[in-house]
Length: 190
Image (cartoon, rainbow, N blue to C red; front, side, top):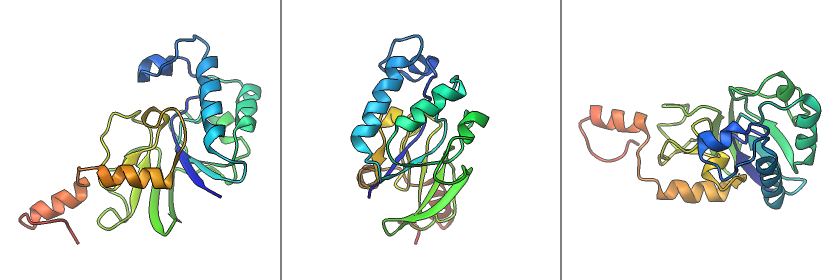
């Protein structure tokens, strides 16, 4: 079993292609939906766990929404985003949707939210914060990263891929930088 994460799929939201610079031109989001479903299922096996960090779909009627949901592999969990309305929340998620999740996975602590946080429990230590919402507009820090489809070729991403990208990040988390500066400079915060 693998653990995968994603955000901001916006199934059914044709305008998101233009707004986020996605490589789709169709007016009804069909091409975008089908590409993301195929990409999802190419990466996610039926027994895998998938955390979707908000904005699963927009502008779909409940039967269309359910049809897309049912076609996606994995045990799906939702961290609620600003476009996740009643029909999305009513889908048969593996557990009830939440606004923020703190979870241990692969021997690490993770803080999952739709929105990027400036500070989170564990940000002064080793907890990693994953988010969506910003569609790739914010650079990763050494402990926080956008897992939205716009940053990951329209597909879910694995924990090892996330850790690989975090290792290359050069930006210090803001809370750590501010504490270090208040202490008078020096190296990273303990």
